[in-house]
Length: 305
Figure 1: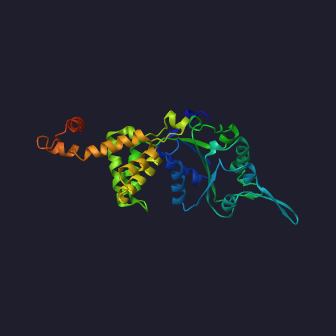
Figure 2 (figure 1 turned 90 degrees about the horizontal axis):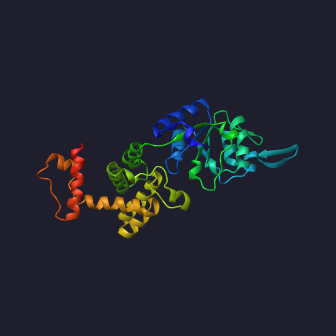
Figure 3 (figure 1 turned 45 degrees about the vertical axis):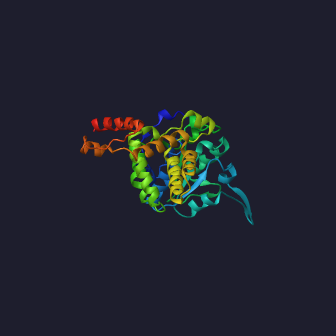
């Protein structure tokens, strides 16, 4: 499955394309790195159309879950698939085939009829139901399976690569307004978004090699959300810097966590770029040499404004 042959779209474009696909009843496959928001996007677009998203994980099903288990009846045998598939048969919904690259060939074969004919066992999907799938790129799915040509031939495939501005916008504008987001997390998310504008390396849309092969955490958008949530909760609870760092580093990796925490601590002692721009002569300069060196970086930023 060579992902470079598929159109690369931003999160905004993918949202619009998925909406059109749902309205036109076009089965779609979103390919993207782990943690870039594929599942969140599908759930968001489905919710906007008041359709429940029924998630079928390719890594947890077998062919009989889709083709249907035999259920004896007085006049014969019915083959009934999983309950969530039957839910999309009883009423409109989005059947979301997630982790498709983790589905073995036998499961992929069972999905062919579901996608093409909208049938699973003896059950036919509701006319208002839709099918959407998501998968990680092959080089980011160790132990996974290549998608078969018959399966990909039944899907419109897009490669989702969110822009850095879209990632920052989520933390700056979307996350703070979500139900359950504390004031501490909202403030931290906005701070992280501003920091990532200066230190773009904090955002790792593609996992580094040691994360793919060794399972090391990395700075994916989803991982930063989880890490910042834990960091803010630890600070609010007064759990201490060691606990806060552990919760952040455990989500995004030690290097990313240390980099962000160092910038955050240093910023407490430095004037902002806006302050320097407003009053270059009067902006306070810290007495410590390492912080003075850091201030020189801010001055360079002001010169580029």
